[in-house]
Length: 321
Image 1 (cartoon, rainbow, N blue to C red):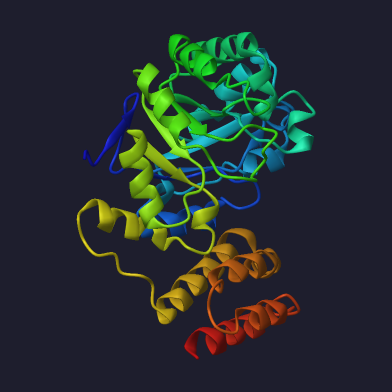
Image 2 (cartoon, helix red, strand yellow):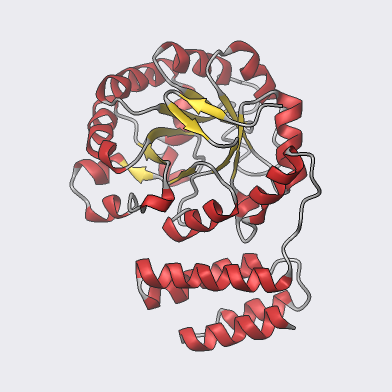
């Protein structure tokens, strides 16, 4: 099994990516994933409306560092011209542009963006054509199988993406109607791979290293994109790389969980300030403590803490027990 993948001119050192997740894949989270072995990470979803109207908060989502490269920038919107304009605006901020055509949440699809675009393949073609003409960067799209179960527009959309100049397609094999319920149908990833010549990236239900390796083997996809499975578990990348190399993966020790959680807090403090760091780390510590004895009580305690020093003490007490 090959070890690397190229998306257009972008050569990646392995086939394990961190997915874009709104409110989660900010710079601290991405750097933690990098340390664990992810070769490509993505910004949170960035609104083209915010970018084109000079919204500082939208540009803040593109904040990165040299250690956080290569970085993909995920844009969402439904107007070809605005998406093209946004692509020009962000070109200097990263290494790849991804168009979100898979987000199922109501406030996104209600604007005609995200997975709502799966209902209109012709519009998808106009969007990709417009963005492709606007940027020299590698261009990808992230899609679902369709709007509802059974309509399966993903094959048509995938072909259009390839014909209009996309360098790769990511498929999360659920319909919009499924949201995140039920089981992702990985066979759809294999179907898409069989009809495209550009790389196909698989996503959906990747919660452990064995899942990542199995998706690569079963579907023939070129890379995998880990989303919820990386929350509180950056070691999924390290463990997946070990399995792919034929080695026994080393699960994190409790002390390693503490070390990484403390680094996560330090990164949040450095880039976002103490108050944001405290509030953000509450949810991340809920994920870091998942499955550990006393985790529920720890989470309840953490969510009441209002002081960073007190938070560190609680972390040390919990992870050192």
